[in-house]
Amino acid sequence: DTVMTQSPDSLAVSLGERATINCKSSQSLLYRSNNKNYLAWYQQKPGQPPKLLVYWASTRESGVPDRFSGSGSGTDFTLTISSLQAEDVAVYYCQQYYYTPRTFGQGTRVEIE
Amino acid sequence: QVHLVQSGTEMEKPGASVRISCKASGFTFSSYYIHWVRQAPGQGLEWMGIINLSGGGTNYAPKFQGRATLTRDTSTSTVYMDLRGLTSDDTAVYYCARDKDRGMGPADYWGQGTLVTVSS
Image 1 (cartoon, chains in turn green, brown):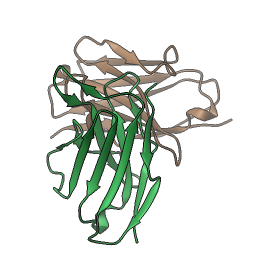
Image 2 (image 1 turned 90 degrees about the vertical axis):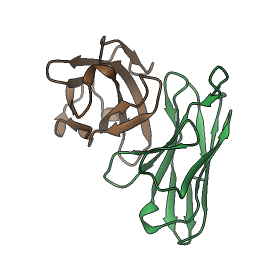
Image 3 (image 1 turned 90 degrees about the horizontal axis):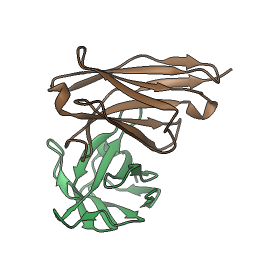
Image 4 (image 1 turned 135 degrees about the vertical axis):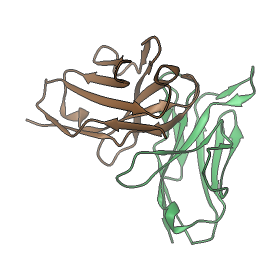
């Protein structure tokens, strides 16, 4: 299986400051035929299902605030929250959808400092 | 708008089977794929498998091959996940989720989740 490793496991950031979450894949997620990285980011709040934030590594889902951005290619990816808001407290997961089985990172918990 | 509404909480004994339903609305059912993902208490997300709502073709994570079965009923726009041989390790919230891109994309809409508790 493709192993997805997120770092850090948790982070505390002050309101208005930047939060950065990293995700590393054990295999490349770049499909050269279409130059797309098969990597998504989800946000999950307690008691709720995950919510899609970013797909193709850097395409923001409709309705997602532009303070969320994704970057990276191949095996290394980053989710950045440019200015943390109180409502961003959640667990964030990366997921690869290039290989079967699709696999998720272990999650990164984001809290307010 | 898109809705995926799942069946309610289940409590089962070890060795039993469970069936969870996921009723879809707000989109053309046969044009999409549905994933199943589970989450054990306090743990991360685990992908179980995917079903093509048009032809019914399925693809399972090796861990669930032979133990999970995904089916769909196009007349009621409902997807089913059957899991056999339950153990306490299967205690989890189970989610259905729609694939965004013909089975080649992420999951863009999720059901509310169904808690399955396996206990003697």
